[in-house]
Length: 55
Image (cartoon, rainbow, N blue to C red; front, side):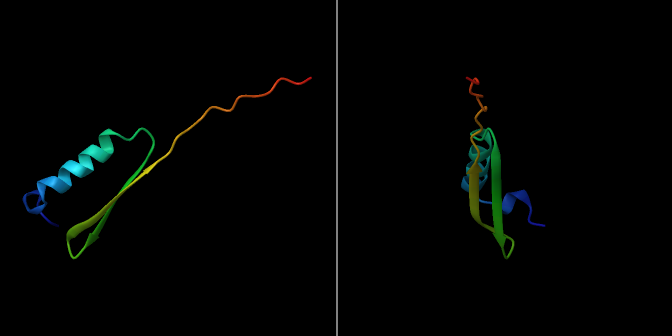
């Protein structure tokens, strides 16, 4: 396991920012050779279903 001190502080800030600005969704971190190479943020927007009245 990589210790926290070896992770670039800019990368940590990006991860934190992604989490703080996400209401619903996923933050995925991709690692190659023990190094973070990619961060993906997938947002989901949920809308309530409004039923139409029957005629």
